[in-house]
Length: 282
Image (tube, rainbow, N blue to C red; front, top):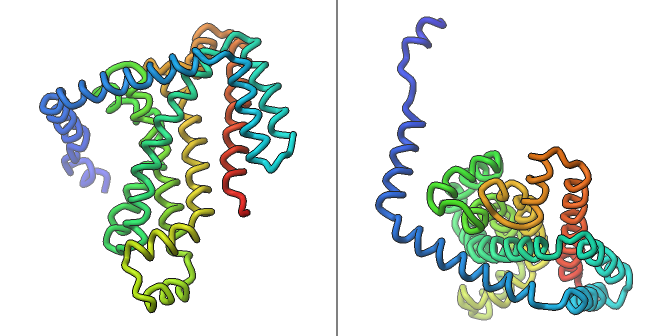
């Protein structure tokens, strides 16, 4: 049996992928260069704006948002003040701003792409059968693998980090948008049909409002997955707290690595609680 298996020629999967990548990088290099330059300039601009805000003002604004979002409860607001002051005290404020920029861009792109795809899946069984295996592939593939095409397309820097983060963080938004719309009670959809609603009106006024809670849960997961890619993206030059973790790892500096990791945890908790509070029913 082993002789028969050994006699079967290997499928040239690696060679095919290399050929496709070479074709893309050679024929679409102008597009990739435009996206890289434009994305880098936009993210540098956002980061400079965030850094220009006095840290005390930024911390107070975040605390105020947390206070309002949690219906005038002080827990998250106090935690935000203490946590962000700790990050500033450790000299990691600029790295935090870079991390916020990366998370904002990757999350927004993933949401803009993910929600329409989820709606398409909920409306078309054919589209669902095609997209679902792709999402399975995206979720099970190790995050480090996404760095390879990111570097091939965009080189080193923050743009390939955003590219890899978007691929890694996209599936939850797509899946939850699909699930939320499919869970809308059939009776309400039929009632909208009986009143002569168009497909667009039915989607905007009935299905999306009722699926809001589920879609927001997917967005919450997308934001957290984008944040989890910060350390991995630092391996290809993405700035931020992830770079501090990577630098501490390379130099075996346990203390610096712990502080940078703790800063990421603090930021992740603030982001998670804020997105969850926006999802609470009125």
